[in-house]
Length: 186
Image (cartoon, rainbow, N blue to C red; front, side):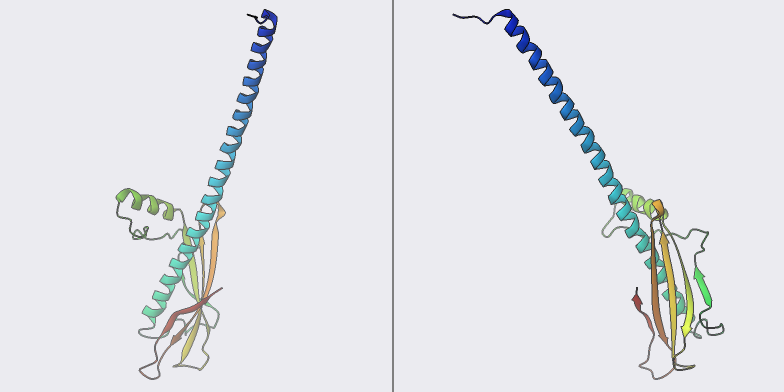
């Protein structure tokens, strides 16, 4: 039987310690790198979500503006007493905070916990829009063209702007109706 000299065995133990320390250092570096990559990905997802939610807020303001135009049009076309292009109505204020209402929730969401979470997120977003009568192409008793400018604002400087043009038909035959809501988004 041959035995290994004690000095060679001692050197091998030292080599195993060095290799173990190097592997530990590499794994720690990889773990730290993965942690930072994961955090950056989460930030990007939150930023994208904030932009989407500001778009929803701006669209909510557009819906409210269209409902206002339709309600006002039951008696007389709105804004016709003002000069063309003059702002005649605003929803929300530039400095104030108007947020999505409490009915906003994810489709199919029934749990109180989930609903509360969505409501808290949407309360961090505000919106503002204004309505301007821009043209009356055929004179009185015809179409009225309105421009609705809207923006939604959210956390982390997220902002979405929408501009919609809507036409309101007044007078004419009984088949004529309102074209409100048939706008173009830019």
